[in-house]
Length: 259
Image 1 (cartoon, rainbow, N blue to C red):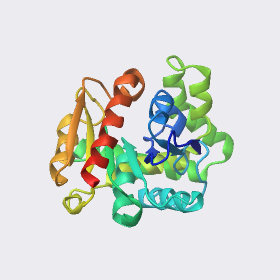
Image 2: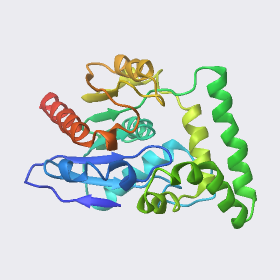
Image 3: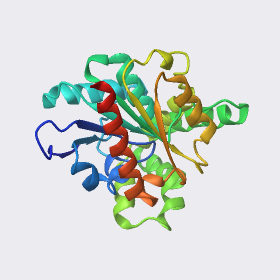
Image 4: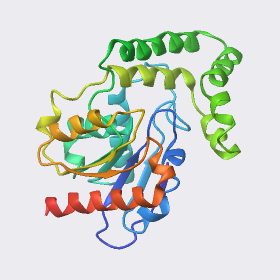
């Protein structure tokens, strides 16, 4: 867990929820300092990611939402504004659905209410189920080989040693199951019931989560407010100063509408 103290009395607490295959630090490191000048900041690693919870149970996004709520209870935090990036968006939505009393508002970034619509997309996510089963059954050495083949070799040429060290912490069986959980997720039949102020940051050139899916989620949530950035799915790092400003503005908008 990462925590930055409140910069002043009355500052909102934001809970940063990272994306698939990332860790809290890998997703948010470039904006911690900026966000910490305005808010108390809490960030955690989701199940199987980084230093997140390890369990033999199948990965569920709902369990990630419950983990986040349990952390808030442990820290004595009565209410929070979840900020969900990519996979963290569904976790934030599920926090509202399962732990409404904790959620003052939502900030959703580069995310959607559902992720697999076409047959090709569904098949791609379904393939992760078989890989995760293989990772569950194989010995540690084979699992390490899967980790290398699935992700690290493709990223090593671009990312520095620190980033690679973050990825190496993953339990890849759980991460692959998380991919299947994302592909199976849909909130579009209930997000219209969301009754807290919501802000969206839409990544306009996102090849991972197409803009029309981001906008479908925005349109489905009553009275949501949106901002946009001319960036791809890595905008949280590639355009960190602008992303930090948009998240801060999104939290400000949530608080203004709450009051």
